[in-house]
Figure 1 (spheres, rainbow, N blue to C red):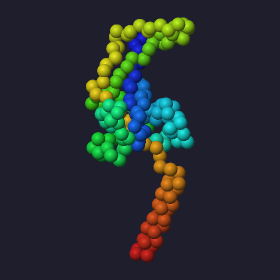
Figure 2: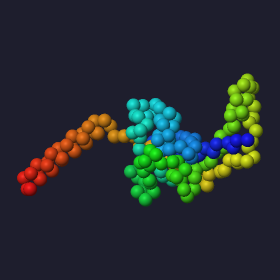
Figure 3: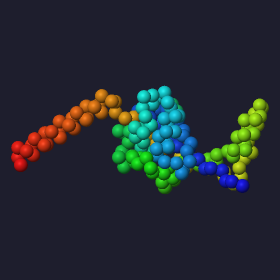
Figure 4: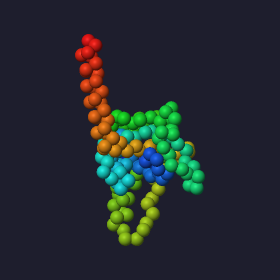
Length: 175
C-alpha cells in the first residue's frame, strides 16, 4: 500500500493586493515549481510575465478579518520578517523549517478515478493515517513580486553602461 503524498497549502499574495490565493505543493518540489504553480493559478494577473521572472518572498503575515484587510506591500514588511526565495533549486521543505503551513493529504489515485467514474457525488473515505492538521495561525506565506516594467529594465541597463564607461574613463584619466 502506498502512502498518500503530503501537500503543503501556501497562501500567496501578489505585492500590493488584498486577496490571497492558495497553492497546494509537495514539499519535494522547488522554488521554480512554486513559481510555475503560482503563474498557472493566476494567469490573468500575471499576464505577460514569465514564471522565472517572478520574485518570491517568504513571510508570515497574520490574516485580518475580511472587512479589515488592506493591500499588503512588500516594502512595508520589515526586512527581518521577509526572506527572498532567490534560488530556484531550493526545496519547499527547506523554506519552512520552524513551522510548516497546512499539510494536507492528497487523495489516492483510486479515489480520484472512482469520483471521475461516478455521475452522482460521493464522499471520499477519510484517510486515518494522514489527518489534516489545522494551521497554528492564519497567515500569508508567500508574497509574489512582479518583475519591473520592461522600460525600467532597459533604463537600468543603459544606466549601468554609462556608469561602466564613466569608471573606465576615470581609471584611464587618473591611472
